[in-house]
Image 1 (cartoon, rainbow, N blue to C red):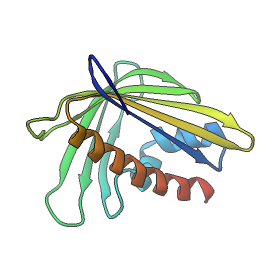
Image 2: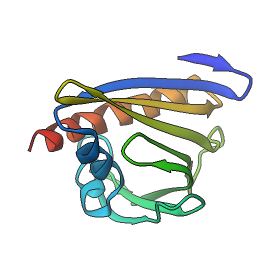
Image 3: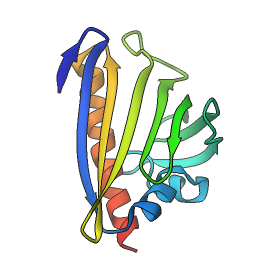
Image 4: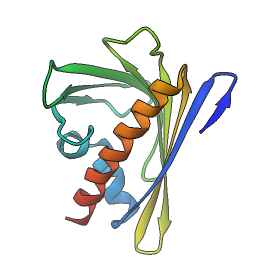
Length: 148
């Protein structure tokens, strides 16, 4: 984690046992995305994805207890199977939430794929930690799906 003028930055890496093309499809195709998105115990009952640059996405997340909530954003860059860049904002934000930018980079690592996430622009350590925990648990689900 580093702090930059635009806010705090989250960086994570995850090695996945599948080729980049498979991982990119898991990250971007609606039927696959809903299988792994969200922390442990959460489901994603709705996902709309328009991958073109300038296209939008919107995901609904259902926690184990509580009300459905939503996140959305816009795609800045779509370079399959190498890189994806998009904005991320909660539709029902807390006061210290602000829009962030997510960059997902995929590199071949032998028979696996190294996925690197960078999410920039957090206003507070609390929000960065929430996202780090969510991404970490989501990547655990993605890792299991990649092996299937």
